[in-house]
Length: 360
Image (cartoon, rainbow, N blue to C red; front, side):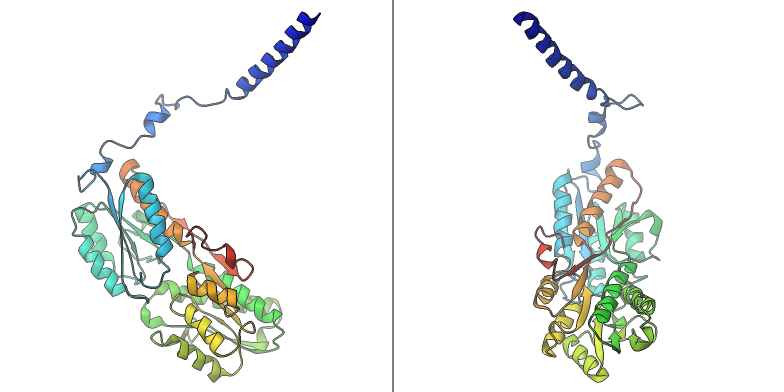
């Protein structure tokens, strides 16, 4: 009897084992075309000798402002991607803490002549300024990817991948600002969107417009639009503000209006100064201030209550994906694929979660 029970139990265990094995029988051994997946997943034999023919890939990433910290996680993302594919990544950019497309273009004109370069990643904040670089790169056989700021007019746009945040994402900040003002108890006042069009950054201009439209819509939906004056300048791309002395310029703007209850700044040039201006006016925790990017100044401003919230672009992706995209173009012949990095709204409740792994 014991033998029978033992046999039955053993059979049951065996049955379970067989059932488990059958559950895995759906695994795919090879492609429908007959090739082996492991073999197909290997890098192409000539990839490491693409263009420079020196046994490894070298990509250069060039930005228009490496001096204010925003692009630090972009460089981290590019480095991570480079490590994954065994590529050397040159981290380059204007040393200026403010937008400096002229210096970026100067660097790009040098890089495109470098015979060791296998791919170029560049920001394109100045519309129409990069076509000669694209032409030179194409002539040299160097693929190009753009990141961060978007130039829709760039030569062969549809053949060049772009990684970045669509300017329409600024609407998230505009909506949050209007909601903040409505929740503050303010019955009236001005909501201002200071900026500087002199820097020629079309992306920033579009952000201001998107935020302005969102503020207007939110106030209108609440039946409060007539109670507030929303001012983004005559063309809704920003109230012209001095980028060379932004803190004093913002304080002067707020004081001259006398009734400002909220402000939105659309880039790293004006958001850290907005933090300082709010503190200088003694309005910590009493002013609806929203901005852009998530550098140290923004994070400290949010934690201290001088900045209500700020929009991040998830810039790690703006370095990581262009490197991978260039690699895929070279190794796999994959056509340019764009990536929208969207927007991350960070407030006092969530600021502690930012930057733990250099993502933002």
